[in-house]
Image (cartoon, rainbow, N blue to C red):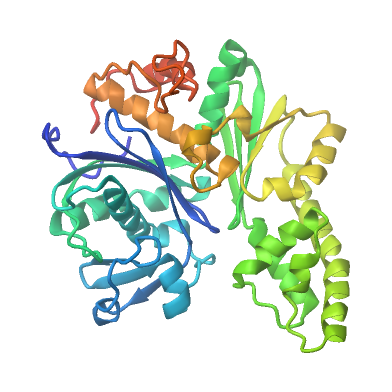
Length: 415
């Protein structure tokens, strides 16, 4: 457990906000809730970010918390999401480590949560968990300290200063939520299997190996959806921009046989030119897709023998057939998204399986907090209106209680 500072126990009347965040390359996703009894909500924010001057953001009022997102910490000001892209030429900063812009993104998520919950931002207790690629865990250890200091001083936002105490800060490897969920599903047989977890995101791809219940391998590569998009733009060479927000959705639609969105990408001025571009797109995309899958398989071939593989991430569905064929040929069963079912009532952003990892990580984090606060949780995190007191929580709490007990034991929160 990572600790930013040895803060005392939070005051009883101070609002407690828990956030589990996944700073993705295509979208920043988070689960937030009021602790202990609040129902979780999904927060989502486009990945673009731009560093700006203080005077640049003064004219933007919070008419919509989805489009006017900016934060100021000390002398540094950042605009995020749609505003960053449309006004300040912000980018998703895919070449940078996720930890590079994690601080302003976490601050923005905390502000968004306060807005959603209609909290006074002058006095909050924050509990933050952030998921990072396995290869970036050590880079994130100072984030908690910096975020705690910024909250103490006050983070400037479009409404007023966001102030409070960071009571706990935890960095977890991407995929850990799904792997933990699967471990409880398999129960005792988990320690008898070699299980791989392949995560395919927009920025990168990661692989984690659990060898008979013990962490054995964690690797990260640049083979995310962004690799395929860059190759498509370069090989077509007709003036496409990899920053075009319609490019990825058009490629995904074409992968399912719908080529109409590809036609709209053309910048030609005549119908004949547009048709020529479409033909080019239809010829290049299968080649790029094939090269991408071959690169993934070459990387995966170095993996030791597996009893099963868990596959998740927004890019996974795009190459689902190719991955299925490969692992079937290898005789390795696939468990898509680790068997996680994201609660439908929470899917207000239409993200579906893309939040499976951060959702299961959030469950585990809540259980850890329950343990430390001696909170006896009687109901599921997402109550079923037809079953107000379910005997088996559908969110996986029942499956994970024993794991939390074994993993965290009686350790205090800031240990």
